[in-house]
Image 1: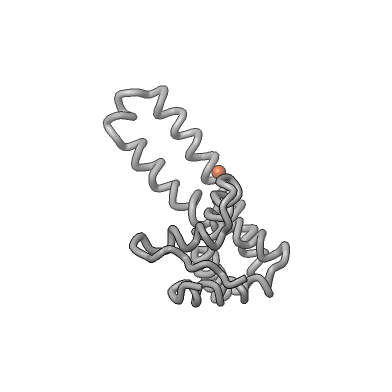
Image 2 (image 1 turned 60 degrees about the horizontal axis):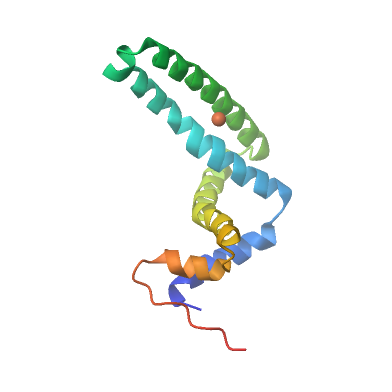
Length: 138
Ligand SMILES: [Fe+2]
């Protein structure tokens, strides 16, 4: 195994041991609601202040509606996350752990879609100038 993947692999093994539906739900809530929808609210507000939207009220109305929709999702996610992880300090750790997993989770989808082993995908995309993974001894 390529040495620069060892720390990540070690963390993944730890996470695999901790795996449960609650952990998967927690990661989903963090990546979808806390790290995606919540920051998007500022983007919607910024778009609504743009000249583009000021000149196109119909588009602005749709963006405003989408912003309200995403705000409700973000509130739901925050409530659910606080339910899953009641302690604030633990939520900080959970967010760090989920963000660490984001790339790996995305690669699992690519791995499946491209019918390519996950380790090969991780090796290919972990460092652009990394040498190809050595074949495992059989
Ligand atoms: Fe949403």
